Length: 366
Ligand SMILES: [Zn+2]
Ligand SMILES: [Zn+2]
Image 1 (cartoon, rainbow, N blue to C red):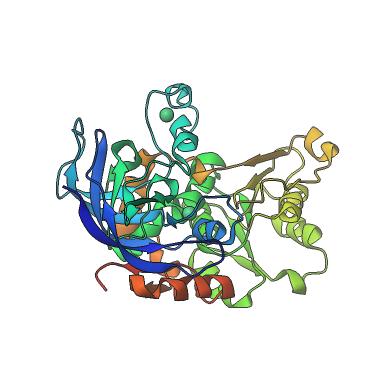
Image 2 (cartoon, rainbow, N blue to C red):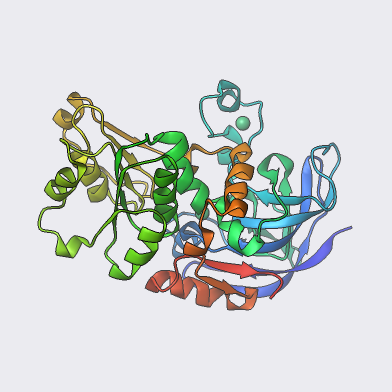
């Protein structure tokens, strides 16, 4: 039996979202219907609205959710009604060559499902696309069981929902991909939700020096709360590369992360890391045609320039991140700055553009 649910629909690029009642189909084989409790607003949603991420419209955006299972489709044995769950945009089919390799979180199903014309949502009989096969800007959604994971119900949905994208990306980049080492020196560009989570991951790993960099001086207090030992505003620094190398106490940093997604920051990260073993990591999403002007001689000595998608995290990594939020090891209150009702979603995106919000979260209880 299909149901009606309220959702924020993006009808066209560059337009405000419109909250409407839509039809939601029953969960098919291998699918699960979820009643959402909260959903974070991510830069990728904004990129889709702005057309930086090419996507078809109309679409229900949103991919950082927490909710409860309502019912399951045929063949789903892993979940049952009432389970507290987190949807995750990276599927884990367990059968594709990438999943079987055990070497990556990139499931082949991700590309197959992205911008798929098949969607459980429709409006007046016309399909409305489901962003990243999740569409969490809706009170209810239907997702594939392999894009879902059970989490600790003690976690506050408003505090923990951003773990499903931004925080997983930051923590995973530091802990799973770069594997930051105890006593190491680290720089992180960009103190948004991803950058602040990367700083927290580096602090958990025992990094001795964590240099946070942001153009907004107001982010210093948050960065330090997350574990940064130093804070730099680029406009106030004469020579960023020389400054970072001096702060490393060596010939360069052990690790540097570009959490903004700009080629010049990736190049700067590469130049600031240790010539023999430094790791520079692209974390922020860059335009697909962007190029990084790297010096090959900077690589010959042994530096690594690499990247991370969703921090290398698989859905099985998320419950542990949620537990860190419950225990207080992960300070989500430094990241979630605003809790809004679904009807206020456009204000949330305006605050993302202005930099007023670190992370806005929709509470469906509001
Ligand atoms: Zn995201
Ligand atoms: Zn797979």
